[in-house]
Structure formats: structure tokens, C-alpha cells
Length: 252
Image (cartoon, rainbow, N blue to C red):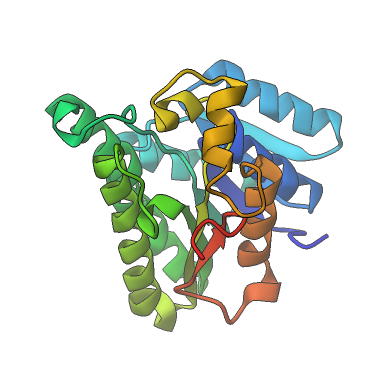
């Protein structure tokens, strides 16, 4: 059990990458807070974890809202009496299209969910980690921050911000024994796939995108979860400020 006696929050855990992370952490002994805006999906994940013998609890959260993030911390401490790991996974995108066709409302939404959420996560969780002598953040960025595709300009920029914030947080919080790392997945077959591609989700369109990935497939929730598991575990005790590409060679 690589996360025995640990308590972890996973945002956006009601589906996709977050679901995979939450279930993997639970299998490895963590008590998991499944945090999501989608109560139906979040509770489903909690139930499936419980059916497999794990420990999880759902908390509804808006990661772009200060009060909601504060309530997430309070709810976690009330439920599990601690917090050791925060996985900032919740994210969104605008549809793949020319940059000037993305309106201000879409831009603001992407930066609120992808960037402001990291700010609010730090605001609420860093004091707790400092008080107990350490903790771990893993922020889910994207290969879009390293090797951006056209049509996703503002999404790419938001994930670039996540990478730079994570590295700077690692430098600043190292003396507090707080580790901060990133995972950069290539596109996966999640609910956002058609938005990322900008075309209907068909086998033909999937193949065009997979052709840009040397290992010839999309990332999976388990791929991302395995990377997060390593970075969150004590095996990575001397790893901070890194970005781990989970991309089948896309960023080579």
C-alpha cells in the first residue's frame, strides 16, 4: 500500500482522469475525497470505491470559488481528520478553433477553472500543510503547455500557467517540506475529447490525433493515475518542481 494512512483530495474526480486517480489512490490505501461539481458522477465514484473495499467521501466543489474551496478543506478535515495530498485535476477547455473566435466568457471560464483554482488551492491548503510540517500537491497540466497545438491558444496558455506556478510554488514551499509537481497528459478519450479536437469524435478523427503520438494511442486515466501515484508517494520524497509528461512521446 503506497499511500497507506494518507488522506487525499482529488478535484474533478467524478469522471475521466480524476476518477482514475481517485480509484487508484484508494486501492493504494488512501482515504480519498472525491471533489467535483457533478454530484451524480462523484457519488458514483465513491460508491464504486466502497464496493472495492476502499474509503472515499464525496464533497461538491466549485474549484474557482473561494468559499467553496474553503469548505472543501473543512469538509475533508471533518470527514477524515487530516489531509496529506491534493491533486488539482479539475479542468476545462474551449472548443478547438481559431483564437479570435473564442469569446471573453469562454476565456474567463477556462482561466478560472484551470488557473484560479491553483491559486485558491494554495490559499486554503498551504497553511494546513505548513501547520503539520509538509504535504504534497500534484497539478494536472497538459502537453499543451510544452508542445501546443493551434486552435487551443487560450487553453494552452492556461496550462502553461499551471506549469510555471507549480515550479515556482515548489521553489517557495520547499523549505516548508511541501512538494509540488505537475503531470502533463497528452489528450485522452475523456468527455472533453471532441472539444480538444474541434471535430466530432469519430474513429477517423481520433486516428488523425493519435498519429501525432509516437506510441500510437491516447492517454488513459490509469496512465495519469500511475504518474500521480508515484509523485504523491514517499517514493518521490526528493522530487519537487518537476513536470512528468504522460504523452506516449508526443513532446519528444
